[in-house]
Amino acid sequence: MEGAPQKLESADIVQIMSYLPHRYPFLLVDRIIEIDRDESCIGIKNVTFNEPQFQGHFPTRPLFPGVLLIEGMAQTAGAICVASKIAESKAPKQVFFMTIDKCKFRKPVEPGDVVEFHMRKLNNRRNMWWYRGEAKVNGVLVAEAEVSAMLVLE
Image 1: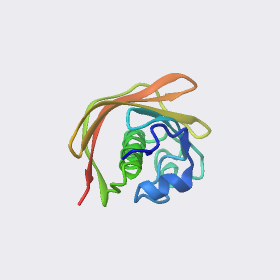
Image 2: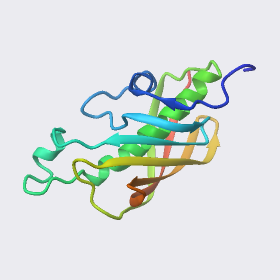
Image 3: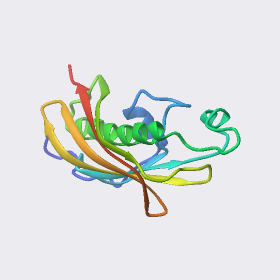
């Protein structure tokens, strides 16, 4: 579509909620910055002690679950896929997390940390997108994975 935005600088929580069906306590991205169409972006997650997962993971040493880091990556990638389709006037009906590959956890994440989900598109075919993600805290790699998303367009 001519005139569609080619680059969106950032997305706040209200915009993210318009792209994704997730809500508290399972919306794991607070903001997305440095968005370059569906090519790349950085999602931000502010980890706070009052989140429900810390009641059981673990009571004596609260650690943010690694699987939620991967979910945060997938949500970040899914949000920019949806945003890119909306920019083309083709708003999807749904977005689904499809695959996880090459997943590695490097360091623990604790309350008070700010996680950055650095997402870079690897490929896109029809309604499928593949991304490489790196979760970082203060520039240090804490997790990495390749994830894919599928948009339901009709």
